[in-house]
Length: 298
Image 1: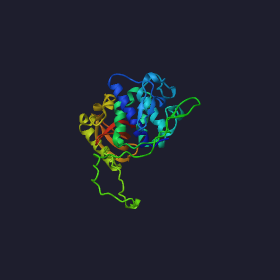
Image 2 (image 1 turned 45 degrees about the vertical axis):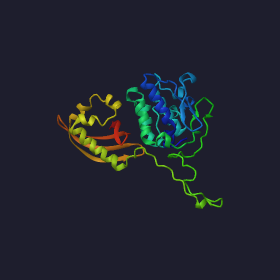
Image 3 (image 1 turned 60 degrees about the horizontal axis):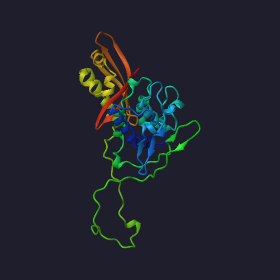
Image 4 (image 1 turned 30 degrees about the horizontal axis):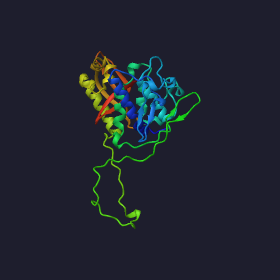
């Protein structure tokens, strides 16, 4: 099994390949561990559809769906299990960490509630380093699913890829004698990731408060805080928020690892009466900006 970060680093190139296929009005239709190859540099590659057969364990119920299959692949990478082994609908365990909201959305039974392939890739891209600074990771956790066979894709070295400038010309560094000890050598320092900084719990809680204030004051503006896919699934958004008056947040808590924020708020209805709801927002990072990919209420 891989950690959420390692799974995201490994499968980001695959997610981007799938998004490119969909951008060209195509689909893969056979995404599974068997459709992933890892080259000598540790980069995961998506195998052409003509070279693999669909795996029922990684195929969406009903019509094939690449987003569902990618979510199943992320689940398998972080748990070692295909979706069917974790219930119906699958219960995503803690080991999936911050990937859990994305996996849960991707495995939803209604295709209209799943993110797009580009949103899935963007979610991963926002949380891991760029490819040229990405850490090479072991991929033994991505076993090929089968009735009784477990085939490992391979094991890649755990070395770090460092960013660097032009090579230095001979003589530009002081020469050291053959007797130089390791203690006298200059230490090597990894180049930090240039990706966006993950939000803190306090920032997520502030986001929730600001969102409620924005959406209730200007529903059209609040609508822009949603991802494009979530906007398409929310045709009554403006109507609902236009009926809310004087919202007051009673409590709020956030989970930065899962990119979720939960709040309880009470509000008056335009037609009279009041209501208290418990809301959970599922967030994604778009650069330095947070967007709402989904929400649940109870």
